[in-house]
Image 1 (spheres, one colour):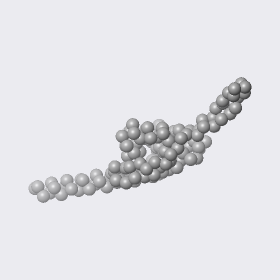
Image 2 (cartoon, rainbow, N blue to C red):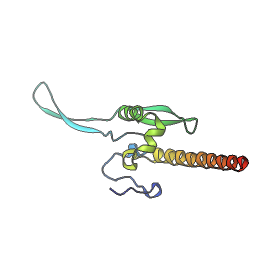
Image 3 (tube, one colour):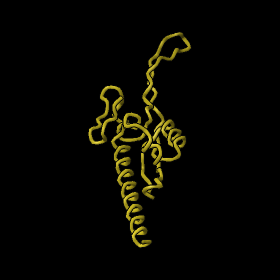
Image 4 (tube, one colour):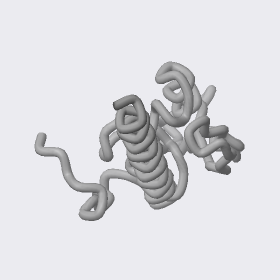
Amino acid sequence: PIPVPEDEWKPKKGLHFPEQFYGLYAGAQPVKSFRITKFGRKRRFHAMPMVTEQDLFSEIMDDTFRFKTTTKAMRAIEKAGGLDNYLLKSSLDEINSYEGIRVRKMLKARLEAQNAAKEKDQQSLLRHAE
């Protein structure tokens, strides 16, 4: 798949439920299935993903962000090595959230500013060394 620029990203309608666009759900979705009663009848039931509000710390921003997250997303964040790595290394379709992409843009801007400052310092050190 061709990567989509962050400004042009739009959620895929019909494939996800709307709450997912305002938190980190990592693809967790409602489950629709049948339960068999003790009398042998099928009864439809719906199970929503377990969602909690979490304060997640960003090392790059040196700040915490409050997200609605699922346990699946928390496992993915821990596996990636933290919120920063999860947001920067995951594709936009994996994040699939306005809030997640907003924080991702902030992280990228902060990293670019830090890299620009490091390059400027290195150039000034080289000039003084000559």
